[in-house]
Figure 1: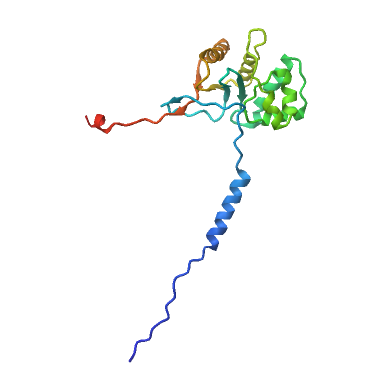
Figure 2: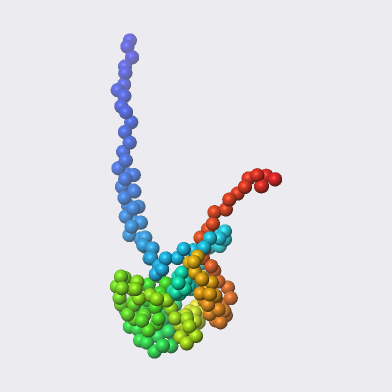
Amino acid sequence: MPKIKLPTKSPRIDMTPMVDTFCVILIFLLLTSQMRQPEPVNVDMPFSISETPIPDFNSMTFLIGDEGEVFFNVDNGEDTAFQFRRKILDAMAEQYEIEFNNQEKDLFERYPSPIGVPIQQLKDFLNADASARKGMETGIPLDSTDNQLAMWILFSRQENPNVRATIKADSNTEFPAIKKVLEILQDNRVNRFNLVTSLEAVRINLDEIQQ
């Protein structure tokens, strides 16, 4: 009796569910992710082999350009409900007798990048568009007659005692500019800080290890 041959079919993979899942994940990432804000100056950081991570919060950052201009930023701490940035701005406004409205305070509280303008120009800076802001940032005054950087540090530490200093300088920045920031920090009793660097590749010599 002859054998009955069953019809054979090539396997078929339905990719529709996987494509649908991929589209859902992609849409979720696009809706929830935030664009990285450009910094006011391009900083080519020096190299080191340190792997100490930068704190995610409770950090005041000093960005130093290659010409010595200084930009300042501070976060809201572990919980944005503390509104440290708004309180710091209120203290600076009282110190320099400047009045900021609620909209300007909201803009300052949400502004993600370091700011490098004198406090007297901060209102115009916050109300300007992105293209105009770029040309307004000449650095925060830190000379002896008007040391606004020291005041930002003072009020930041008063509002958030847990804040830590982080310095990010260009590899071509002259040392006196960095030294000036360090002196201002020490005058405000800040003796510990993080220095942001790029991780340098370490070459391993297997012959030396085996010996």
